[in-house]
Image 1 (cartoon, rainbow, N blue to C red):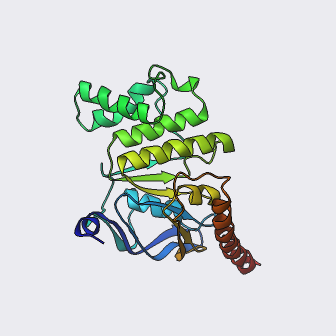
Image 2: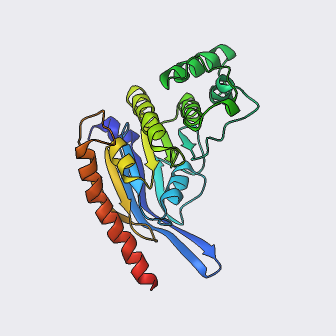
Length: 263
């Protein structure tokens, strides 16, 4: 690991999270340790309720750990910041603005000039292959195109870390594969660090440098797979399917243990 990589990495250090609940206290995460290098693409998987989205929200600074610390570039994460952008399953676009104006919103909030806003927005719209749709209204777009606009807007904010919470879960398989290509292209060009939460194991293997499995609640680091397959990868690739099958078997074992505990 180089000094630059060490200085710019994302660190999750012994992070636990407790929530008050009707039954007292719910322990969402317990002693999670994770280090992500600059430019790395990791996918986090696990059963429902294991704390995947909780961990993403903590990294985003939308919530605080009960114990432990999250650091980016050595600085503690104490709240939201421009160095982290979170993309949700819902594209969350502004329907009263056209496509380009939606993307321009990110550099506008960063204080860039109108000329810079336009240039930045156009660059990222071109990157996700939406040239020609700049003046379209959000209701005129398909689900996949809306997510590409949302991705362009996130990238236009120029974050160090792009956080993605099941952003393609609502898309059909064919559209999702196409958007995967767009995301991978954008990631390779920009060199952003990506932390991606998904239930879809094929999606995780298709995209990630590493796949992280969280245990049943309270979520703990259960297993890690380093994916060394050459890029570009595709969902129908035999090697992708084989690795996904191995991970899925471990995931099913984890989910089954939770079911047995409830019986």
